[in-house]
Length: 102
View 1 (cartoon, rainbow, N blue to C red):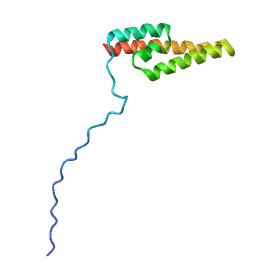
View 2: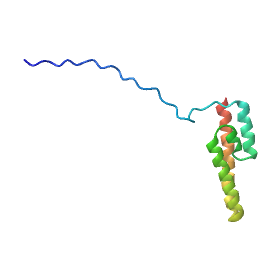
View 3: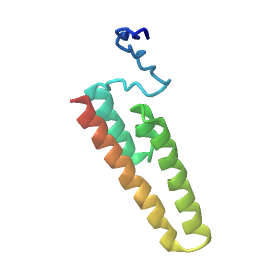
View 4: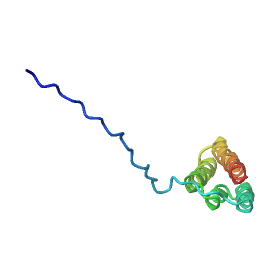
């Protein structure tokens, strides 16, 4: 006579807590800091973004502004469009900081 195999009840699988990768946890910016960042972005392209905590965006805004200005002086004036786009991006980032602060 063959023995019957009895199935054991399986325990539920428990997943580990998700790890937070360094730099991915967003800190809430105060409204005062967000307004200051927007004002800085109006006059100093990208610096306000860095002050507001968006370092990567701020660095790229500064790099694009400088690149556009240098190319406009050395090559052709239409390269100033790159600087203009970097400035608009900086203003949009400042407005986004204010929206996140609320």
